[in-house]
Figure 1 (tube, protein in one colour):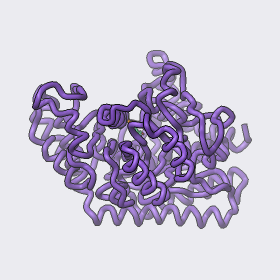
Figure 2: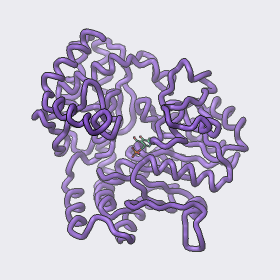
Figure 3: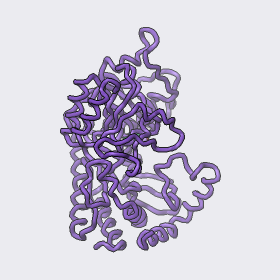
Figure 4: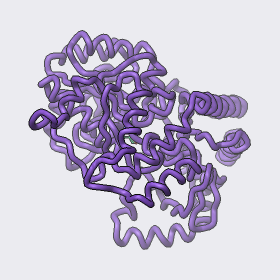
Length: 446
Ligand SMILES: Cc1ncc(COP(=O)(O)O)c(C=O)c1O
């Protein structure tokens, strides 16, 4: 471990003693102290008590600017007045019923109105369930079983997509024709028989892989902005190439817009002008409540319709389309006007540009990726366009920056990715960039 990282960890420990105490207590009853590995980090995470606007407050009395927004979810920041009001009103009427309720129709109408390829939509409670159903729909629709996904792409925690999410490069095979690598124990080894792995942003390599497996492929699933590898935007020709190829071969194109939906009012598909057959949603559409949705072509979504006998695909879920999440989702989407997206784009570009300028000034071996309201630091001098280039990141440097930023009063992801919300002020964004500068200085850059 470098001295710089050690020093940041010591500083962190000294300022988060109550979190440490809670973490030790939590670890007695939950493995690792929590139920969500994505918010665990060594030596221990902070325990948050309150979020307000752009700020997070923790049990040690630390106030931090939240550059993470629950992993891109809170696009209006914490406790936006419209969302709080809508949820309070719904709370007075009840939180979940064994029957549909009117708000879910308004919510579905908003999704259909906004997203060009969505004729019909269904709601679930996580992005994981959204991609699971998108893939299941494609399998039922085509009568085929295989899927193609990109190396370094995260689509949730179900078996079918827990392959080659962050594979060790030594076991990942040829960069242009990657081997499928099971992400963790507990996934049947047979799952790799039903998947082919493609390099992100390389349409020629993808075309070879897709054509070679065309007769077995039900779906190609792709994130228009690869979140896992640091918000790498797709090359427009990559997405349009996948579109024409899948159309030609009778394969369904599935966009995972669980994160990427936030880049424009109609999502990434509107931004890129490429329409998939099915889309998976999550995060912002639930206004901070647990959520997911999948939607798409009328004929594909008809698989779920029980009106004329048993549906071809069964779909239940105690909390699917519950009115509380619908209320928060409607209120959030209602605030996301074209002007709000222009503001998010402008602030995202502002952070990326200021970071680039800082990094150039101090000649740090870092690059900046992102699009619209999303940004990420990449601790490498290699341009990051796919998983293999992402894998050149210096992980210890990233960890030093992450810890350093917490010590400076800023929350980013443990890989130093972040996103802006409508309530971030430019002063806070300047503060964030200045904090990055100070951590660089402490770690010997600048
Ligand atoms: C692109 C993408 N797909 C799917 C998911 C899974 O969503 P959830 O955590 O709601 O299950 C995530 C979560 O971060 C995601 O980023």
